[in-house]
Length: 406
Image: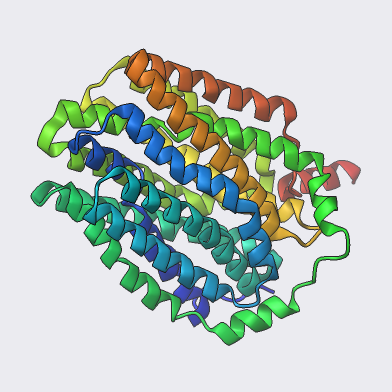
């Protein structure tokens, strides 16, 4: 039986997701604005972002195995928060190639630890039966954290300067660490100990699952389209909007996160009732449409409105990754390894996206870069339609089958 949501450990999990997301908001689009203001070219910005995602690619699977083996999941979250704070300090203090790329590498590794550790804590505290509902709640609080962080950082960057965004991100590590102390370490250790241990040969059983390979392929294509969209738009907005660029970027982040906060619990219930695949198709279909809208006009108001579609994609993706990972790891018990493998696919797609889009924007222009990303988004939709099977046990389909049998 899942634990009631109002109990202290799960209330602490709400605030942990909120503050970790707030802390992480400074990375990505605000980096593009910051580096553009420091006279970096689009290709150099793409390379810097690519370093972080390349480290993510290399670290995902080892991090997943590490979190699977660890009994102290809070320690992994603690280390990740400290590393993200340190990377923010590096960015703020030294906007030079070596410090910026080092900061991106630290952040990439920290993210590899953070996501599976928080997911493992969630699964341990709720159990499998309450996991879907709790994932929707996690996504809601993370979205609220992203929206709050983007708004505050946008105002901070506008009133002060872009460097202040990263000093603020470093300071936000403090409430994130305070939220972590609200989780009972003894309760987490007891819950994790009660979960079944992975059987012998479970790693190879997971790696040989064709559903995992299909999902990883879809994820690569998703992020090949998605990862570079907002950073590219941020660079264009910086050149067009000048001093108000940080506020526009904040709006591009806040709007989608409001959509995520509103939709995530409903989306989790939809995925549980009707299956993962319909939600996946809906979320993936928003990607190419957003890329085409970005390609059609550089008008700041259209960019902000088109960016709302990111909320649809982010809702589906944020809910589905842990749910599909739990589905695929049901027999092997390798939940965090599965998350690590999916994270490897995310990192691979994002690395290719930022590097290739940056090169295309420099050599052929923004319009060509956005259209190329739209093609990748359409490929992602077709991949889900053709190759991705249903991994869940949808309640709605089960009930329909029961009625038919009767």
